[in-house]
Image 1 (cartoon, rainbow, N blue to C red):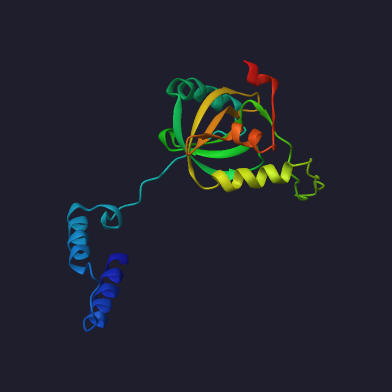
Image 2: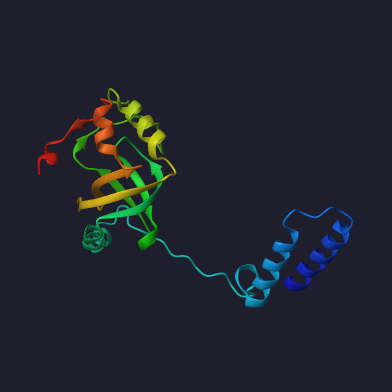
Length: 188
C-alpha cells in the first residue's frame, strides 16, 4: 500500500512538473534513479533499512579495555569529534570500529570549564582559563574529522592519548596558548 501511494504521489508530481523546465542534471538523475531501482538499493530496496549499530564505550570500562589493544596497535586512526566537554575531554566517533568513546588528551593538565546546574546538581564555577580552553578546543575540532593515537585507558573506561587536527597535536596547542600545563605523565 505504501508503495502504491508513493507511485501515485510520484505520478502526480511528474504531471505537475511536466511543463516546468528541468534541472540541469535531469537526465543523469533519471538514469541514476533507474539504475538504483533496477539494483534495488537504498530507498528502492523494498525491505527494512539495515540496522546501524554503534558501540558506546563511554563509561563502560570493561568494553573499553577490550577495544584498547586494537586501538593501540593501529597507531593513528581517524575519528569524528561529536562533542567537546572540556579543554581536554572529547567525545569521538571512530568509524573504523563503529564506536563512540570519551577521549582524554594526554600529557596535559587542563583547567575545568564552568558547568551549569543540571538535574538538581549545583552549578560549578570555572577554574581560571577553563572556559577559554574549552572555547579554544571547540573552535579547533568540534564536529571535525581528526586523528587520534590511543595510549591507554583509565579506570572509568576513557581512552587517553593524543588528538591531531590538521597534523597539529591539540595537547601541544593548548600548552602553547597557555590554556593547559604539562602533566607529569608526559615524562613517560
